[in-house]
Length: 174
Image (cartoon, rainbow, N blue to C red; front, side, top):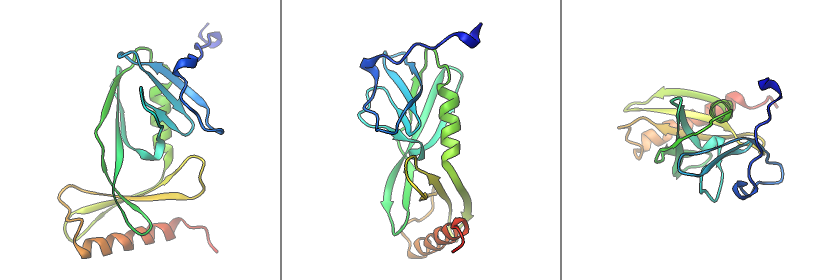
């Protein structure tokens, strides 16, 4: 019965340098002889020297054979939030995916505590508050729609106000 079959343990040579509270949830081999490791804090990509936290992933898509991950990159740090852009997407052909695609989807989705999209005078912005594993509170970021003039003072001011309003809406009452 499948119920009693155990998945083999992650080979010691493939085990990333985990933090004290970090634990492996799922793993699988990739077609290029790498190993993708899912933990409670994020995902270790094949050959990576550091983990990609759940809050650092913009998108993750599973085709049934390939897992495509689009990380977020910080374009600018403002007073209480970061301006993010899509980083280069990476795609992995997973040989025996097991729980990896479900764990990635679930944990990326669960990291999003607040999200809303706002039209601006020119363009638009998405305000996002995300949970960061091992840290209290939310990490705030914005992602502008393509073509939004992000440097214009009125856009920056409107964005500052939107982030402040979002933070206030989820803050516990005093």
